[in-house]
Length: 176
Image: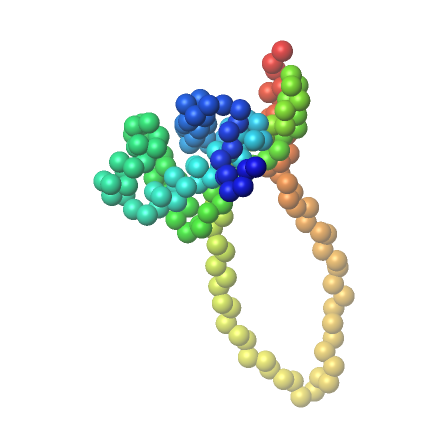
């Protein structure tokens, strides 16, 4: 029975699992995105997000030392984590996203792309001054001009998905 057991083992013993976690974390922070199996992506995602959330607490010596202990004493990784903390300072969680990328050719394992979410700046609407309504005594009806229908804007909702699929196809076709 696996009641109240939260850790995924990934068919590895503890040392190999910690090494895998460290290498995937390091690759995601340095390269901005990684391509791995879906299980590994789901395993590493909360761990990386917790590092960024911890870095958002402050740039104190104690916090730096804790982060250094979690990323194997690599100062450039900690510096990048603090950069991500500044980038996501107004965001509560959800710093990464997982995109499914089909199955691997060799063993049919489900692949995924783990990447950072782009931060969109909130749009600030300017208040327009209210114009005074002028009433004309002579005109009982207002004449409306016929307006031409504007063509609907073509919005590429999934533009990044298309780009990712193209990259994955190019990467797969380039390797033997």
